[in-house]
Image (cartoon, rainbow over all chains, first blue to last red; front, top):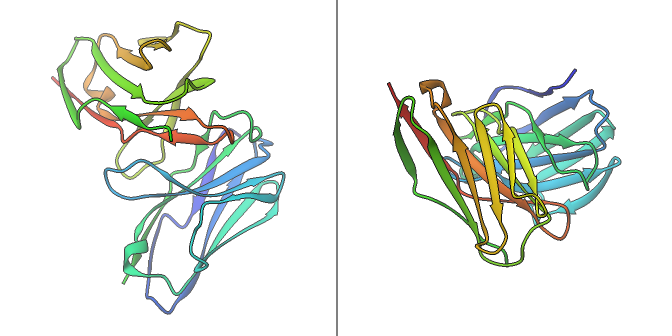
Length: 113
Length: 111
C-alpha cells in the first residue's frame, strides 16, 4: 500500500462547528505532516509529527489541534474556524523526518462559512 | 532566509516540444532539491530528487539538473504531451529537514 488517504474529501462548516480531518498511511512512515494550501500558492507547513511526537508547530492558531494516535493515523481537529481558514488541507508522510521524499494525500477541501 | 523563485506563472508549450522549468534559490545550497507535480485540487506527487553532489538525474521523459554555482535547478520534460499539463513545484530542504516550496509553474501543453 503506497498511498496516503484523507477523509473527508470536502467539508463545509460554520464558524461555531467542531470537525476533524483524518489522514492514514500504511507505508511504515514515521513522519507525518499537515499542510494548508490556498489557491495558486505553495503548500504551507502547519505541523510535523515524528515518531508520533509533535516536532514542529509552525505558529498555527490554537483553533487547529493536531493529534497522532498511532504511527499510521494523523488527525486535525478544527474548532471555531474563520472564513480565511478555507483552503485545501494536505496530509503527507515520509519514511522519517530526515528522508524528505513526501507522499501526499489527495487533500480535504475545507470551506468555512 | 532561503527563497525560491520559479519562472513565470504559466508556461505554454506545443505538444512534442521540450518544456524547461526553472527553479532558483537565493541563499545556501541545499543538500537536495525535489520536483513535484500537482493537478488542480489534488496533493503534490513526487517526481525527482537530486542531491547537491549530482549534476543530473533522469526518469523516463523527465530530466533534472542542479547547478550549485548558479543556485539553479532546471526541470525538463521531453516529447511533452497534453497530459503533462499541471503545476510543477520545486522544493528544497532547510536546516530542520523540512521543505521550502516554490510557488510553482503552471505548464500548459497545447495539442
